[in-house]
Every structure is written in structure tokens, then in C-alpha cells.
Length: 97
Image (cartoon, rainbow, N blue to C red):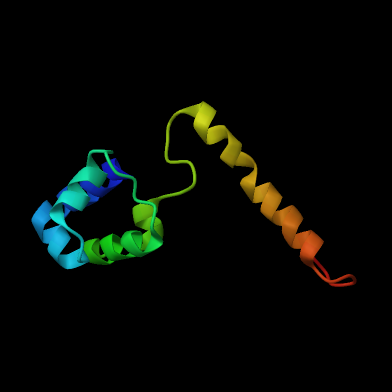
């Protein structure tokens, strides 16, 4: 997510200091996220950064398979089918699915 953060920030011509000020997070925090030294694992922080960048949390966080590495992305390919199965299983009997 650090690479995505850097790309979005730079595309808006925003400095790390400006991002920090708008998000309420420290400059060192955003810097360590961008360099991969810290993970961005709190939704609150994702929301703050997304708001500061004026993008949706989904646009900022991306999809479940952010990597071009097929070995890492492949397990996510089955998720839509699993959601459909779960939805059908959760539907009350007699309801059209």
C-alpha cells in the first residue's frame, strides 16, 4: 500500500508534510508507510489518508489482489464465486436467488 500512497500523493503534487497535516498523522508515519517499513493496518488511518488525498478508501486501498505476482493473486480469483455461494446459502428457503 506504500507504493500506492506515494503514487497518489505525488500525482496530486502533495508533500509528505502536507499529507501528514491533512490526515492528522505524523510525517514520519506516512514516510515509513510509503517505504514499506510500516504497514497500514488500521482502517482509521486508511480513512484519514484517503480523505486527505480526496479519494475513496477503496481507490486508496485497491482490490484484494494488488500484486502482479500470480502466486499471490490467484487465491483471490475464487472470491466472487464464494460470495455467490454464501449469498445463496444465506437466502431464506423459497426465495428466488
